[in-house]
Length: 237
Image (cartoon, rainbow, N blue to C red):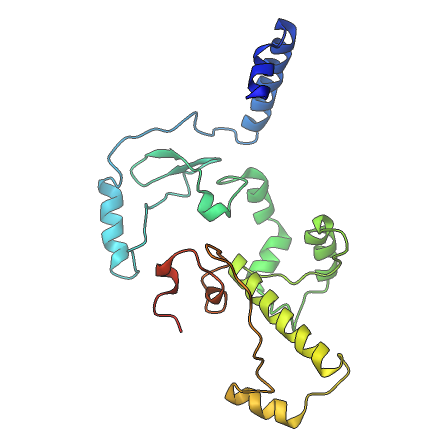
């Protein structure tokens, strides 16, 4: 409240400067997406007739029980998502926070047509075994350029759940390695045999501490630590 009151006491000159700054900032953001809708526009009920028909067709080949709406991504732009009936909605969900730079971002669209992008997409590499000749440069100039201080290596994953599963595995393997005596100590015959039966000493009896309401993903491993909604965990061993 104090900050609100203080703002209310701004001198006219200060208020004018603040308003000018906001206007300039708004123009800057708006310029990122030429042609972005000025605001939401509702033309039909949601879902509209075109969407309803498309959902019926989709239901024949896909589980549509979780579908909220069908999107026309060719028409969606910036912060606005468009459905087949032409309804324009301000998207504050952003594909579960996975598209923070907006739909049909022109910078990404340009990058998507680059030879480097085409090469990566059509020659999808198994990076652990067959990384590309310039993978070090890609990582150093990309992800590692914004990595937290002290972290100088990276393991890429396709989604948050994948990344967490890899982190779980790395933590268990590292702890077992330390117990074993270090990275140079070979596995014992007993460890190699027992792990195939999910038993000690080859299979660890360690566990992960998780908290109520936590969400770490919905893959098989991450579900063991996810505790946000019962529907996510029901029927899973």
